[in-house]
Length: 178
Image (cartoon, rainbow, N blue to C red; front, side):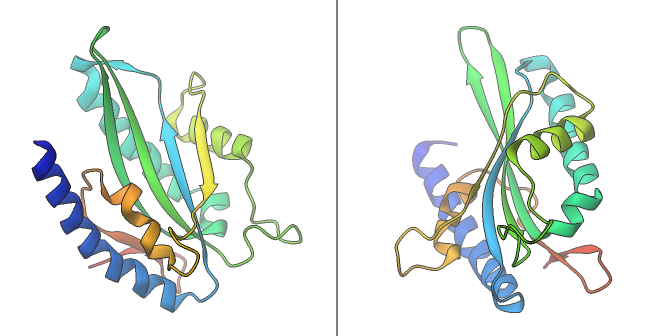
């Protein structure tokens, strides 16, 4: 997409996702949020389709792990591809907004996962010990008085497919908010 079209698309995505995100926040008062980046090593251009499918499958496996289910009540994700024009290698990575249980950052709860634990979890579901980087950081509103949904711009500026917010159901499963 051209820069203008990409900006318009990001604005449309933002306007579709924010109401869903706000609905999840209202349904789960006190919920915390984090912005996560899950990476894999660079891949040649001709292996991009396989790498993308592998990352999608790996993320799906991660959502089924006990530690993930215990800490995360919802998420939305977007894949970004960065091309190194010199080597023609592609760096695929997932940007994920995680909605976390209320006590996630409290020391007295056992919900918290360190960067290393997230990395080990991601390596395990991807079945790839060569993965070096996972970045998880608290998501904060853009302004002091803003809502958490005001911070969604970073994730919604990437193409999102499907355009959905996943939330935990009472039975412990996850479902997409239509």
